[in-house]
Image (cartoon, rainbow, N blue to C red; front, top):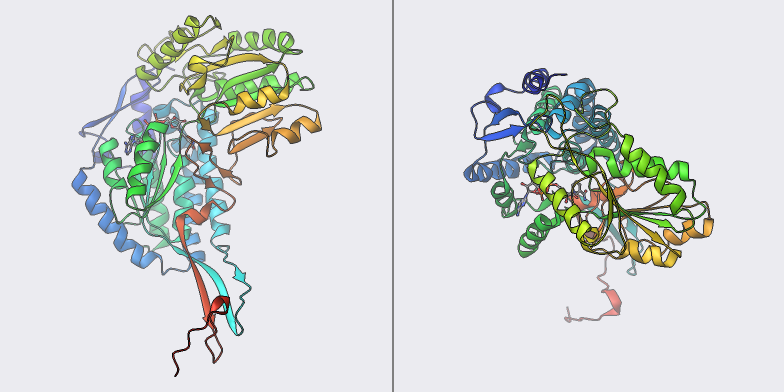
Length: 508
Ligand code: NAD
């Protein structure tokens, strides 16, 4: 497919999604396609003053939306899920064009949006509180969950649409309007999502204005959102550096933070592992999305007894993987997001070389018709020690590999980085599997057995520990972060007993 088609194709996808061309022509923010570097949109940016107006509109919307019964709020999300199903192909196409994902992964990302809508619709009838035994007679104590207020969502380029929906679908059923600051690298997909959401709103009928707004721009716009007192919850997905800044600012005004930050994820391949399964999992986890997932496999610890069986097979897979235009059939590895990502990869590989690592792959690949795209050969880096670039997240397809002798050592290595997002072990030994997911096993938010660290489904709570930020999104009870909890004690008796037997007799 000729690369000049990225401009035409994105115009067609935006038109099919119903985005007003005024939003992406003549603006100041250039949207690039990583496929060929072409400018595929000139997007109108939000000013800091407009963030203020948007926050005011969201606060106004909140006053009405919180009073709408939660199952009715769920109806809006149900309609949105329907609209997403109808627009799946076009939205996924735009994800491919703007984020460089291969077709199947882009479709998977939109499917994830649909899945979280389904989850949120059910949730809209399950915002359960507890009834708690009270020590006082003729009293009832209960916990109720109330809408928190407008929810800010700051998202990263690598999941340009799914991350917003994880937050928005839950926030909306919980009663919170949403304000979205997408990555400045992927503004078009955000416009596409909003157009789809607008159709759901039109069908819903009487939702308040300002329920879902998009704020286009860079970190200054994110910072304005983070600093706004009318936004009591902010979910921020991106680098640890971003989260450190955002988290501190939110803490200073006592706002709730849901932080989803960087990962440096590992896999352990134990002696009893099925190497066939491990090989497939490594390939997808380490090379999928060109190594640009927060859950990408970056560190591989292979037991010394199977290292020399696994590594030659892995090298072969790496050498044979199809790299190229992500729209083309058979391509598994698309482009890096931009030149900065490529330079980061070069830097990390240079550092590894300096430490005496053995490298295969890692060069830049020229793809016909995509001269200004940055296509990297996935790199396999056999390290002598757990050090240097292996200890940090480089957002590129680099897999560092090391031998290990015993499982305690491998678990210690798994845990010996500052990030704590995802991890996995391949083993058929029950004791090893259970140890890995036990108290003394992986310290990550996600710990898997016989599947790779990436490719989570929405039913579980998603997120990680340590410098990954501690936030949880998507399934399980993640919804609680979008609400405030009230403990209510009701006295239906004729006396006023105090808790803990305290006596306070005023003589009346
Ligand atoms: P990034 O940190 O550069 O940007 C993410 C978003 O934060 C963007 O919208 C950006 O404009 C905004 N931003 C940056 N600094 C800000 C600040 N100081 N104040 C307010 N907003 C600010 O990240 P990226 O390059 O887009 O994405 C890659 C990173 O995201 C990786 O580290 C990856 O691991 C992480 N990520 C984490 C998860 C997760 O769920 N844990 C998911 C996806 C991506």
